[in-house]
Length: 97
Image (cartoon, rainbow, N blue to C red; front, side, top):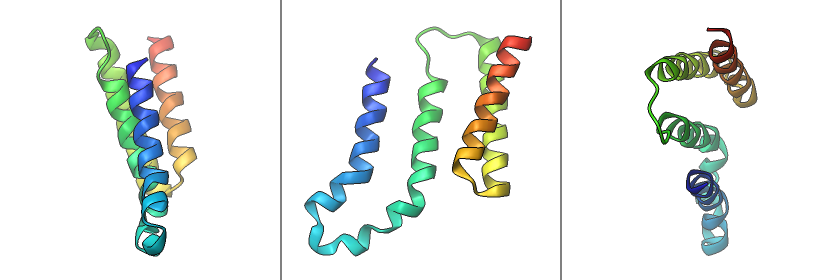
C-alpha cells in the first residue's frame, strides 16, 4: 500500500505542483508534458522491481517485460502501447511458465 501511495504522490507532484506554485512561469514547465511518460514508466519500474519477497524466477520475467517495454517505447514512442505490451509479456510469462 505504501508503494501505491508513493507512486500516486510522485505522480501528483510531477504533474500539478509546478503549475500550482509557479503559475507565472508555467511555460517553463511545459517540458513535463513530454517527459511525463518516462517519469511514470520509471515509477512503475521501481514499483515492480522491489517486492516484499524476492522470487528469482519472477524477477527474470519482470526483467524480460521491462526490456520489452523499453524496446516498444523506443521503437514506437507510444506510451500506452509500451505499457500494454510490457504488461502482457509479464502476465504471459508468469502464467505460462
